[in-house]
Every structure is written in C-alpha cells, then in structure tokens.
Length: 529
Ligand code: KIV
Ligand code: ZN
Image (cartoon, rainbow, N blue to C red):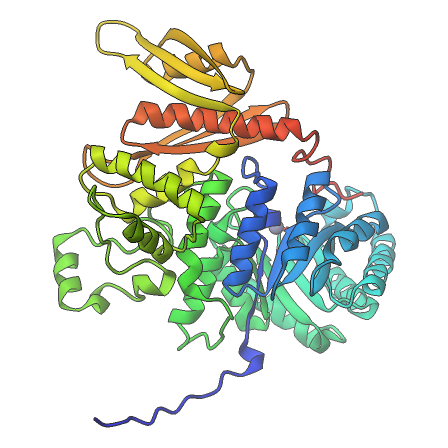
C-alpha cells in the first residue's frame, strides 16, 4: 500500500463566512409560518447542532411569545451566538437584551429604515435619523459587546447617506454592519460593488464585519449574497428552505453548498455541517407548514432524482455524470432501504436515526404501532413515508380533538356523506354531514362537532412516494381572529389525511388561543416609529 502525501492549504480565517440564520425571525415572520414555542426551541437546537454561527431567535418586543422563545433559546444555546432584533428604540433594545443576555454569547441586532421611503415613515430628517442611530447603537453597545446594526432598505438608500450612517453606527460601537436588500431589488454586480465600496470608503469599515441580507423577490437572493461575499462581506444572513416574507430570504442550504461545491471560484468556507441540511429542512417545512417545492435546489424532493433513461444510464456508470454533489453531503441516505411489515423496532430506530430523528422510547413505541399499521396497508415503506409518519404523529398526545373513526361514502350519484366520531376533551361525539365531495363532507362533520369560524386559507395534497398505495401528505392552514395555525398529516387514504390535518390545525389553534396574545405580534418590524 502506498501512502500519498496530501498537502492541505490551511483555510484562512479571512475566508471564513459566518452563517447567520434568521429562520426563527425573518422566516417565522412570513404570514402563516408561525411556529409554536416548542418548535422554535427544537429548530434552534438543530441550527446550533449543525454549526450555524449566529441564530436570530426572534423579535423580543413583538409579543410575549417572541420574548419567551428568544429567552429560552438563549438559555439552551450551546455554541451559537443568540441574537434578537430591536428597532431603533431604547425600549426595544432593553427588551431584546433582557431576552438574549441569558445566552453564552449574545448579540443585539438593531435597525432602522434609511431609504427615502422608509425615512418617511417615522418622518425623520436625515440629521434626526443619524442622531437616533448614534443614540441607539451606543445604548445597545453599553449593554452588549456584540451589536449588529442594519440600515433597512440599504440597497435603495442614497449612497452618501448610507455611507454616512454606516460610519456613525461604526463609531457608536456596532461590531457588524448588515446591508439588507429588504425588497429583493438588487442584482449580483451591484451587491458586490456596494459592499466593496462601503469597505473601501467608510472610515472604520476595516474594524467591523460586513453582512449581507437578501430577499428573493427577483429570484436573486442566493446570487446576491454570494456576490456580496466576493465584495468583502463575511456574514451571510439566510433561512432554512429560504423561508421568509414574500418570496423569502437567501436559503442557507444554497449558500453553504455553493461555497462547498464551487470552492474553486469562491474560496470561502463556513462552519456548517452540510450533512444536517436535509433533516432540518424537513423539520422546518413541517413546523412552518411551508412545504418545499419539488425542484428546490439542494433540498427539493427531485434535487437528486434522476428519472430520464439517459440520466439513469449515466448515473449508473459514474454518479458524477449528472451529480455535482453527493446526496450524502446534504444528509440524504445514499440507499433508500425499504422497510416492510416484517421489519422490527430496532430497524425502525436505526432507520430514523439515519434520518436525524432521535426518538425517545415512548415516541418510538407509538411510531412503531403506526408504522405496522402503514406496512399492513402499503407493501413498501420508504424513508419519506417514515418521515411523514413522524411529522404526522407528533402532536397527538396533547391534542384536545382526536379523530376516533371516519367513514365516507362518495361516488358519482350525489353528494358525499361523512360519518365522523371524534373525542373532544375526552368525550366522544359523532356527526353525519353531506358535502361537495368527501373532503368537504368530512370538514363539515368536524365543524358540526367543534363549531369554529376558522377560515381555511390553504389546503394542499401531495403524494409522499409513488404508486396508488402512496401516502398523501395533506397541509391545512387555518386563520381565526388573527391567529394562524397549520396542520399536517399523512395517510394512504387522502380523506383520512385531510381530516387529520384539519383537526391537527384546529388543535394548534386551540393551543394558541389558550395562551392569550402569545403568538400574535402586536408589532411588526416594519412599524418603525
Ligand atoms: O429585510 C430586512 O431589511 C430585515 C431587517 C430587519 C434586517 O429583515
Ligand atoms: Zn429581511
């Protein structure tokens, strides 16, 4: 055996790109993506585990729920810096510090809209705003050593004014200057130039880290973020699955993998363990109720699927023919070993572990029962089936509404009829309703047993795997009195999955309503006063 001497060129600290994840703040802020307290803690834990450097955990002054979540995330943090958002207001900054100070390492992120359109909202002159920036950044810096400042809508702010306020923020003690493309307006060339010019021309710029925060309105968020890095930015702000307002933010998985795969032309690196990407992507999709589009880069269901004959042939001969990264690099198992009704508990546990799920004994027992039920109905149970099963069953233990049985009669001859038995706070009740199709009849039966005015704002069905015995995953989003809740379920029977998803969303709505004001934002980050 010969040993090859490999010369490794050490990666320079100057080429290290800090990953700042804002799934729990900018992502969660997008209408309908609200997560429960427990879900936020779980996602923060996964982000910390995968090596994200900074977690923006929320906007503490926005609501009691946001404050509590940021504080808990801070208390449980391990390696990541925990950051909270605050407007340019002393009360906001105090509240933010109160929440993040419990972390091993904390950051205050304060911002104000600096473009002409944003300056008009609080009706401040350029000088008045400059004064406010100096006051609030200095105030934050007196509380915390790590302060990030953002001129919101930077890419539409006049150059002279932008350069002036960036200098003021640096002088006031900001340690990171973030340049947001709030409305997704910029393009890669501009993005690189803007950062490079700020670094070259603003006094003191060499002493701080420049960050890029891009929105995807024109589909350029990832390209703009990478261009900003080429221009000198060393912090990318991003979210899992690109979750975020409107068209979303830069997707974490895209920038991490782009830097990894194209290190030849982008010689920068991150501290993120890319093999954890798939698991967190699925968890964020489940808890936010925002499914990942099939052809989404890196994490889409089809991202590593090779269907056409010519592709499959090439892949069998040499995977590199059509693959620029390996499925394992993002945490997809290379082999999809099929489970069936003879598979045991140990195999199930191992399989789930492989997918990033470490279930406790009770959860595993419960899942094993549901896995056996599924395996009785479906010959082959794939990885995606198991993941759908985990996602579908996680709330049942604490649910107030539980479906006991459902029978539906439908066909071509008339309206569909649903007969539903549901337990409500432990008491069983039944209803029979007719409707325009089986799902309509079923939802009416649920409403007959649990009257509510929740508006159905999303009903989405997708097949988990192929074949007529495939499970269907159903996502439902409900809105009532300003509360939004999403529910998901999977079953080989689409109507059963629909009923469970609907009831799942109702249960979440009940939890939200139970905690008055908990998840309702009283303030949006755009209300800059
Ligand atoms: O898009 C944006 O401008 C923001 C700021 C609060 C940084 O999210
Ligand atoms: Zn944003």
